[in-house]
Length: 182
Image 1 (cartoon, rainbow, N blue to C red):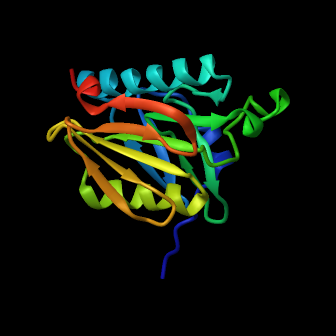
Image 2 (image 1 turned 90 degrees about the horizontal axis):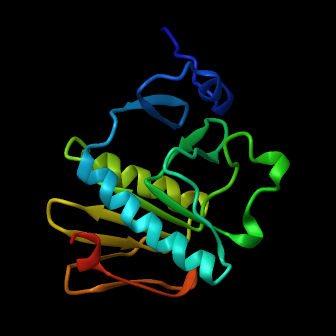
C-alpha cells in the first residue's frame, strides 16, 4: 500500500509563487483558481467595510485576502479567507508577521465561487469553527444571501432585506446585506 506524504504549513510556505492560491486542508494541498471579478468585488467591499469600522473604533486589523492562517497542526490546515478580522489584542507581534499567522481569525468571510461545491464550503466553515473562529459569514453571490455561522455550529441565512451585525466580535458593526450586493 502506497502512502502519500502530507504537506505542512512550512512546505506550503516554500512553494514557488504562481498564479494560483492554495488551501492546505489536513495536509492535502488544494489548488484554487483565481477569483472572478464579482467574487473579488464582493470580498473587497465587505473587507473594506469591516476595516473602516475596525480602524475608527480601534478594534483590530483586516489583512488582505492572500493572508494564510494556520488553523491546525499535524495534519496542518492553512486557509486564506476572502476577508478576515483579528482583534487588536490578538494581532501577532511584528516579529511574527513575516509568515503565516498561527491563529484563528475572530471573523472570517468566504465568498462562494461558481465552481465551489457546497460540501467543500461547509468543510471550510467547520475547519474555521473548530479552530476557534467566532463568526463566519458565507456570501452567496447567486442567491444574494449570507449565511452566518457561530461557534455552536448554528447557521442563519440572511437575505437582502436583513442586516449583518458583528455581534461580540465587532460590537456595533452593521452592514445591510443589500449594500453588499448593490
